[in-house]
Length: 357
Image (cartoon, rainbow, N blue to C red; front, side, top):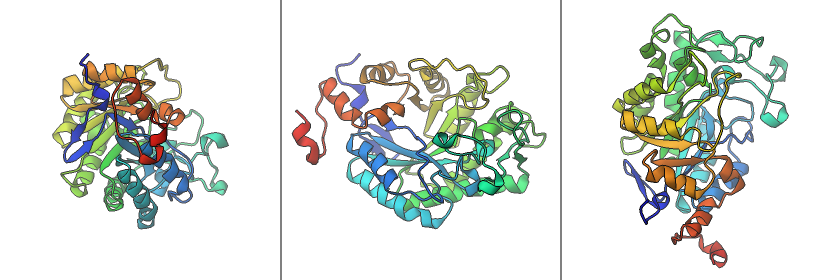
């Protein structure tokens, strides 16, 4: 290991400079009404900016009402959503963090209640809706089948992502991440477990990748060249016959050719019965493999809980960015603590200087 901690080295992404390699991973808050951000989101994200994270990504932000996981999801499908998001973005920038947004569509996993409300399918009379998917295959066996998207529906999805990116830019976000992981719509098109279409969006590897590549292309049309674009993928379904790490390398090579800047490497979420070996840093190998074989920057995520572990990942060149989720829920000021623990001096908010010693 070098004497200078990689975790606190800057990272340049096009014209955007991250002050360190710590990114707040997108984490659903299930605290919106009609898609609107509110003071919960300001405090949640703002606290982690004050805590010193280099990059903050909003939770999965739905590009359409039917693209929400639950009625409590954050959204960006109408212009009225921009005002509060812009207020939050301004606060994050003021405190030295780069604001990013994850654009998402839940696909067949839509129309459920929030986790602490039982995480069950919503009935129509409760305000539920019919989820859409590549094919009419439900997530849970025995559930009502989602509606298979026709060509017009697919085009609407592409347009919704494009319009979401335009609104994100108006709100002042500096990074967009396209959510193509965890069994949501774009991942559903990628995986042969959920996509049994027989048109140009199904069947072959290239066809199953088509929608994601078209979404990326549409977003790039409106997202400025000087600003970075990420994709979050599930690098494997953890199921025989599903999407796997080799597929992820091939996809990442295609995404790089389309001007993608970084692959955020998660996994799973496609089927409820997958056996996932969720141990310390269990997804880091995917970030390493994709970085090495596809020659693109990657982010590592998943049970990364301390600065020594994060530093080792970076020093061994397994990833370029460390995404942290649950640990930053527990410890929003982790970057300030970690810097002290590795013996380097970083800037603290002046309001908190009395606690620095």
